[in-house]
Image (cartoon, rainbow, N blue to C red; front, side):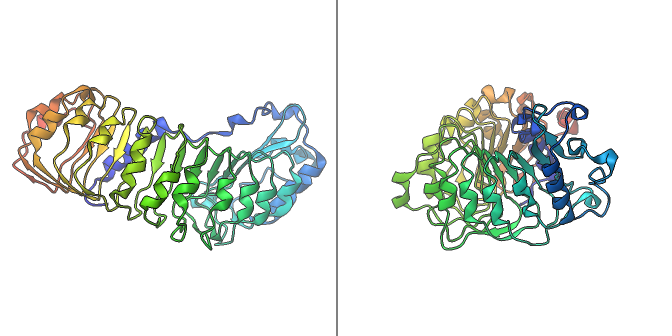
Amino acid sequence: MGGRSLKLLYLYAFLTLLVFLRPAIGFISGVGDANNIRCLEGERQALLEFKKGLVDDYGKLSSWGSEDEKKNCCNWKGVHCSNQTGHVLGLDLNGDLNHEIQLLRGTISPSLLKLPYLTYLDLSCNDFNQSHIPEFIGSLNNLKHLDLSWANLSGPIPHQLGNLSGLQYLYLGVNDLKIIDNNLEWLSHLSSIEHLDLSDTNLSVANGWLNVVSHLPKLSELSLTRCDLPPVTPSSLPHVNFSKYLTKLDLSANHLTSSIFPWLFNYSTSLVDLDLSDNQLRGSILDAFGNMNSLKFLLLDDNQLEGGVPKFFGNMCTLYSLSLGGNKLSGQLVEVIHNLSGCVQHSLWMLNLDGNQMRGPVPKSIGNLYELRGLEVSSNLLEALIGCPLFNWIS
């Protein structure tokens, strides 16, 4: 992480949330006044069976029961029904990592197969005790949204997930998952996928990863951070054809080299959020980044980039956050600030240059970055900072 401050990271996370809010339960069009909906008895029994597989230490599912006053499962916490048919359409049982007592434990019961109209399943941020993702989830044919992230799951990702051809959102990040035998073919069958998060999944043997993900025609957000990705080879580049809808790409912490640039720059017009931090990128910052005229967030920190900060950043009119810390960038800081005097001075909220080889004083012209709220220039070769009043407007 270098010397980046937590304050800047929190600000980046906040800004990212403003642009990329994870889709909520609202796509379940049937949700209405649960008091006027009667759930189906078979589906109610399936939910009670599902509950038996869970350890609910603090009564999160206390509204689930067989008592007369609890018979309508459409009133149960986390259960969403169609207001026309009463079928269960969604289960939203995500935990809260900030409040561990709210986490569910246990196993994921195959009784979910008795919910034939289930389209939304969120079991994220719970504790399934290093168990495997059940293969039967690949038989929940109507699923559009599956979130098993931060759920303490382990083992191989079952290829049966490839049967979910209607799946639009798949979040499996921050578990202890892997693939075996270089098998990512299941992923190529998810022709409807829009958001894909496999962060922290061991993909070290997935030599064809780039070819597979690049042929998902509707993909708009892809997160493969800390996946130990194999290097991109020139032979794989002719087969790459990323979705024209791709707006967010996170390949951070993967030991990737500059060989990724030829295919990356072919998709410069749609990307809004690009994170290549903590890799092994070398050399100067290429001018082709300047053609990414939709970028709001660019993270290139903790690489081995050299040379100056290019002038083209000043003309990136939509850029909110520019993070270049932890590299070997050099030059006078006054020149860097001058290069940011274009339209970007009206959009840039966060600038991270810490841990480089910048020289000179912090210039007064930094006050021309009108929207700046976060600045990190520590661990450089700067002269004494000018008086604090200049920074009164930086929170």
